Length: 96
Ligand SMILES: [Zn+2]
Ligand SMILES: [Zn+2]
Image (tube, rainbow, N blue to C red):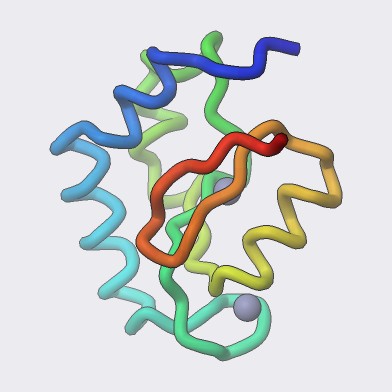
């Protein structure tokens, strides 16, 4: 598996993503959908990869989004041993 992916990284910094994630998160009142803590992360249920990052039906589709707190989000990603996690500001951190 590729560790760093500039294309995916670029998507997460795009205006389209910022607008979409902010609209989605505020529609959920910034409440975690799993534990009711305050949510800071807009998670993709189907993870964004190099193969789907160009597909707005996946990247910007509200049906594919989930508002999560940092705990639930990291749990989700560690569980699946994903290569990324996010800090409290939503910055992508590569797992060491
Ligand atoms: Zn949570
Ligand atoms: Zn995620």
